Image 1 (tube, rainbow, N blue to C red):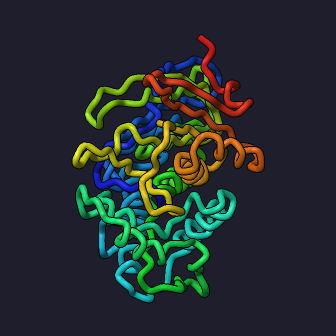
Image 2 (image 1 turned 90 degrees about the vertical axis):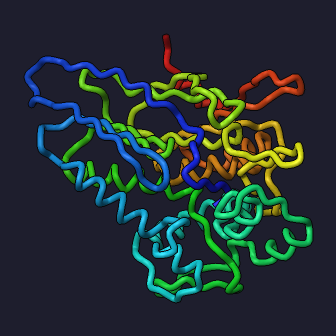
Image 3 (image 1 turned 180 degrees about the vertical axis):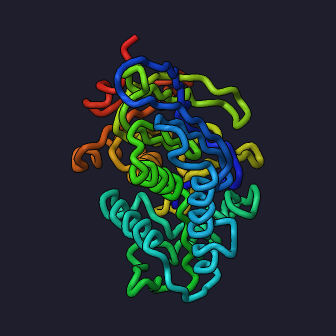
Length: 339
C-alpha cells in the first residue's frame, strides 16, 4: 500500500443523494440508510429494497470479518499476524486482494506496491508519528521493498526477505466496498450506493428513476477544513475512488510530508498533483489505481491509462501560483452532472 492512515479523515467523494419515492405498479421499495464505523473510518450505505431484506447486524458482521483479515493496526488480524512473521494460511479473500494488488503493480510498473509497510511506518504514517528518517534509514528499508519479492503459494505468503511488511490500505477499502455490494446483490438488492472511507460503488438508480449523484471534493488546505464539492458526477453501475494529499500530511521543521510514499524512491511524493479520481467497474481496482496515479503523477498516469481498458480518471493539480487546474481522460466528461 502506498498511502496509510490511522483513523484519519480521508479525501473522498461526498455522496450527494437526493432521494424521492415514486408511485407505480412495481413492488414497493423502501429506502434504507445505514452509517457506522469500520476500518478506522466511516461508512454510509443507501439502498432500495422490500423491507426486512437484510439487517444492519449482518452488514456490520461482514465489515468486522473484513477488518480481522486486512487491518494493519490490529496485530490479531490476518495481515497483522503475517507482518509479525507468522506462517499462517490465508483466506480466499486475502488471496484475492493480494492477487489484485500484484496485477495493479505490474500494470503500473511498480508505482503501486503493497510491500511499503515499513516505509510508511518510517515516515510517520503508521504507528510512529512525524518521523523524518535519514537517507541511510530509507535505503536500509527500501532493499526489502518490491512486489516481485512476494507471492502466495498454497495459501501461504512466500517472501524473499523476512523483513518485508505488507500494507493493504490503498486497496482494502475499495475491496470491502465490493464485498458489501456482492452481499447486497446476493440478497436481490440492485439499487444502492455503498461508501466506505470515501470509496464508492453504485448500482441501478434512485427510486425516482434518476442516477446517483456523487461529488468530487475540492482539495482542502488542512485535515480539518470543511468539505466543499468541486464537481458533481451522475453515475450508475460504476465505482469511484479518489486519492489525494491535501488532507493527509504532517509538517516538521517547516517541511510538508505527504502520506503517499513512492516505492521506487522510498520518499513521499513531491509534485503538483493534489488528487486523482478514478472511475471503473471494480472499486478495489479504482482504489488501487487512484493511489498508483497519485504516486506516478499526472503525465505518467495518463500514459498508463492508454493501456488500461474501461477506466477514466480526473486530475486536480496546482499551478505555480496555487490556482487549481484540472485534467482528465477523454471519457471522464461523460460522468459530469449536467445542471
